[in-house]
Every structure is written in structure tokens, then in C-alpha cells.
Amino acid sequence: MSNVSQFAYRPVVIVVSGPSGSGKSTLLNKLFEEHPNKFGYSVSHTTRKPRPGEEDGKSYHFVTRDQFGQLINENAFIEHAEFSGNLYGTSVKAVRDVEDSGKICILDIELNGVKAVKRKRDELDAKFLFVSPPSLKILEERLRGRGTESEDAIKSRLEVANEELAYSQQEGAHDLIIVNDDLDTAYQNFKNFILDTYDRKFANI
Ligand SMILES: Nc1ncnc2c1ncn2[C@@H]1O[C@H](COP(=O)(O)OP(=O)(O)OP(=O)(O)O)[C@@H](O)[C@H]1O
Image (cartoon, rainbow, N blue to C red; front, top):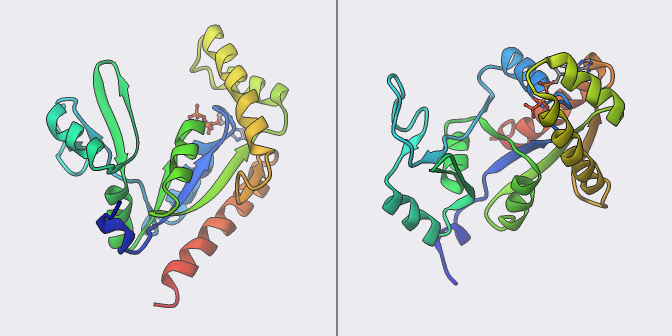
């Protein structure tokens, strides 16, 4: 099948994954604080109605169900899913738009998202970074300490964590695994990998 993306360049995307509570947001927040102009998130498509103050193309690309269906048919999405009756999706073009604005796109996604990006390898130059807790016991303590989840939610997150950790141990699953034990050390490793990717993309242009 011929499509335009075969002839376009592959935008770089850094895929950050890891069990819930492993510290992805903590690390990403530090990175965005330290480097506000180098990295960005892609703008997702959704069929949900805009809320007051939400701008089309900024918060989301707001589309109808028909338009969303057409994008699915065109194979435009890296991944898409339905939550509470609304469709949400991340398109390859949304990733490319971030790169076109001079930034590197970061995707903070779960295991199915990682697998979906891998299926788009001919369209995306993806680097996979996995944030691992030092142990399941510490993960459990951090999830409890965060205080944002019910006991049931903590249990189900720990089950999913087992699956994600098993996947991460497969050969070649990720380009870098960061064990988030001491936060400063983990952040240095995280930042070095991501800044290196940024420099490779933009420094020589
Ligand atoms: N190295 C660390 N040492 C101690 N506590 C940490 C460390 N890194 C993160 N934490 C704490 O662990 C908790 C979980 O971290 P965070 O919310 O960043 O996880 P997450 O991977 O983004 O989770 P989710 O996928 O659910 O959003 C937070 O309370 C955070 O402050």
C-alpha cells in the first residue's frame, strides 16, 4: 500500500513508559521545568466536546465521530481508544507537528501504546525509555504515599506493573531502562538520554 508517509521523514519521538507510580511524571516535570523550549507533547484528537477555555488544535484537535472514523481508515493514528463514550487518538501528524515546531515530541504512554508505536516504526523514529521502580515493594509504597489511588486501584496497578516489568526485560524492548531509586541520579540519566536525542536531531542543522 502506498501512502504519503512512506516518502516523508520520520519524526523523532521519545516514548516514556513504566509502571504507574514509577516516577514518569516526576522526571518529565523536572525536564520541562529545566528545558521549557526543547520538548513538547503531541495534541491528541478527540470526539469529546470542548470544555470552556479549551482551544481547538491546542488542548485537542476536536473532531466529529465521522472525521475520527475517517482518520482511522487512513491509518493516521498511532493509537486510539474510547473512554467514557468519547474517542481519543494520537496521530503521526501530531508528533510531526511537534518536531516541525523545533521541539522533540515526548509520549508518556502505557504498554499497549508502546506496542502501537513499535508497529509504526516505518513512520516514526522512536526511542524507548522505560522508568522502572527499584522493586515492586517500593512501587507499592510510592503509590500509597502519593495518596491518589484507592486500595483496589493500587492492587490493579501492581498487577499491570508485573506485566510491564516482564515486557521491559525482553531483549531490545527499550533503548534505555532507568531504575528510579535515587531521584537525582535517575534524573541525570533520564535527562542525558533525552538531551542527547535532542542534540542528534537539531544540533547539526
Ligand atoms: N526517586 C524517587 N524516590 C522517592 N519517591 C519518588 C521518586 N520518584 C517519584 N517518587 C514519588 O513516587 C510517586 C509516583 O511518582 P509519579 O506520580 O511521578 O509516577 P508516574 O509514573 O507518573 O505515575 P502515573 O503513571 O500513575 O502517572 C510520587 O508521589 C512521587 O513523588
